[in-house]
Length: 239
Image: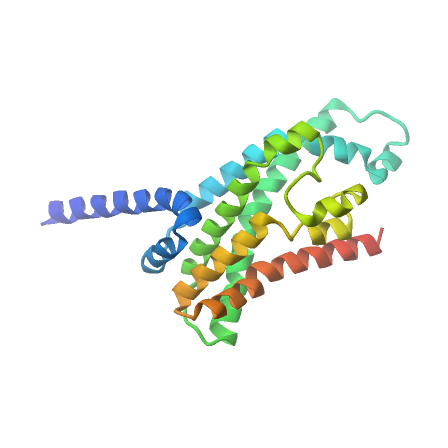
């Protein structure tokens, strides 16, 4: 009896791992089916590892461009006072830029899931667990980060972080740290795609009408983008 139970658990674990890996691709072409599975059995580890790994890959390939942008910043130049930055400091800055991107991508679905839980459970009167929402938001973020992975060759070819498929190109001359670029860069193919997919997922998890799911998506994924713009605006005010 114990052996049969053990075999059953092994089969369930393999099935869960298979579904988790398949979900990385399914979120692009059949998100409804994916989120139905997540509602029944949320999975976190596999998509979270993929999210972090792809983030590090992007950070690694773009580290030289990010480093140069930091070296050219007026703030750092003022601190250096014309002196050359030591190689050790450059290496540390490069490592931190790569890890910083990875950590920020890990924190994003935590924040969007928390916002979705607040608005979905307490404002809209739905019922869902944080684990289920967290799993769904990780997959949404995987969609976003893999989409941006395909933009890396374009960025490397032009050697400019403002390169992309968002409205940010309209104010690219102001730099990626400007409020205008931060705001307009949120209007991009992958940002909008993520919000739409998140809306589908939230409507499935909460059993809301699709339009209500989209509203909740804007209040979670979209609100996080708005907070990012606000932080950029505050940073610009105190420079």
